[in-house]
Image 1 (cartoon, rainbow, N blue to C red):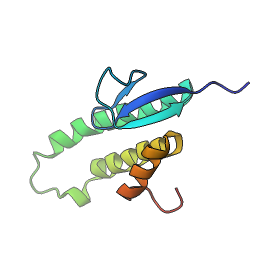
Image 2: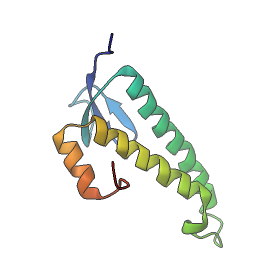
Image 3: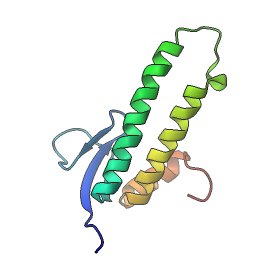
Image 4: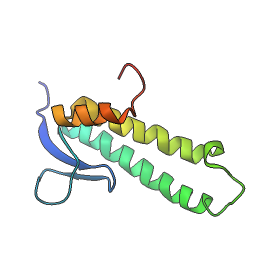
Length: 107
């Protein structure tokens, strides 16, 4: 039996995931299973951890952004987040993400 999808409201900036449209600010409306939400939450948690590493790395003046693996990790994870939001999002979410041009070709 396929797991039932529920409506969630997502704020990428804060990593917020809510089932209430009025409880907090949100940018994307998606339909997802509990498993998909768990996966999205893990991606947000991974980026939160990477953000802290980047904060400390930012105090090393000789390391450029494009030569920093933790920045690459953040970029890769945020691309995965947007890929999931594109896959699970409503038409407005899909259109907005496509206009951002953040996904690799073929997604």
